[in-house]
Length: 283
Image 1 (cartoon, helix red, strand yellow):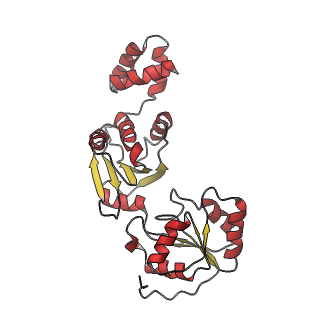
Image 2 (cartoon, one colour):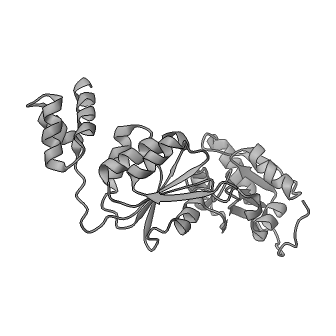
Image 3 (cartoon, one colour):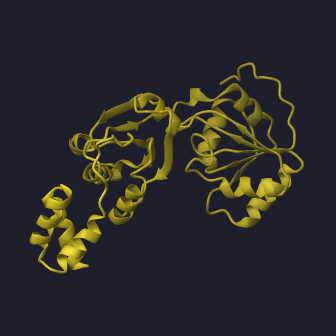
């Protein structure tokens, strides 16, 4: 593809954080293309993914793989080059460092006195927030939810009082379990699932977590997902530490009775509590 007319840019030594498309390759900015074209080196998460983008726009560049597993000496070489020339950092998609590699490199570059410049562009979290219709005047991006049920619940409980929309990245295979965990904690909150952003099958679906879990159980999702949870309402019931309550009840009663005691105290579904009580007793 022939390059469009790019803004004039004289390469200056430093580290340039360049946002790239999250799906639709047409979402690259002209400034980003100019910087990519003029860079002496492009540090990237996966050279194959970045190579595809560069090839589309006819840009030839020297690439260096740099992900979270890169040893310190690789970052050191990139920083040394940034002292003398323009070096770009990209991730596979979107804005680097937003749940993507790059934090260590940027921190070490700044500590070394290297000029760091951000070339803004696509970001899945912001794109999803803009289209979801949830309050956007205050939000918290919290990266990926933990894989394990207990850790996921603890993370959500810790964010219960945030007076803003919560934004997470999630994978398709884990979406249903995350929605069920949210439904257990906050059955009335509005939730949004945005997936395949900027692509042909882009979708943003809203509703309660339980309703969304039911939908995606029947229609297994594909693609990368942004999961958003609306802020707490004034009449929202407090989040309970159900594990602690169940353990206390299990000290005096069996799983069934313990689940009933905690259900009466918290209003949480007894069947879910019973299943968790069995897990706690078995563990």
